[in-house]
Length: 99
Image 1 (cartoon, rainbow, N blue to C red):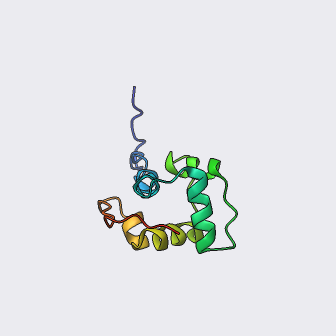
Image 2 (spheres, rainbow, N blue to C red):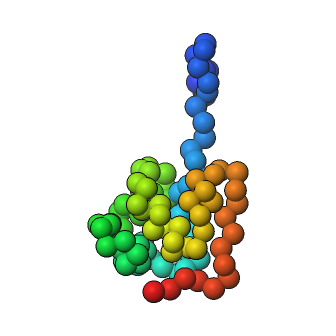
């Protein structure tokens, strides 16, 4: 049974769609989670990612930091606003971005 919002507080929001968007970017490029790590690290050498982190991002278990979001945006040739805004449907270029 869903919890009722306490007086003076807003109800909890649904989880953000960020994870779905990150997964869509990876699948659009036909990459495994490990492959996505390699591509993101090629964009930003300071990232030290493993496949489990990509999985957690895609399942909304953890939120990626700003550097990771920037790498995803560069990889997909989109803006961070496209990733962050739940009201924006992600549309990716037809050709997959490859490195």
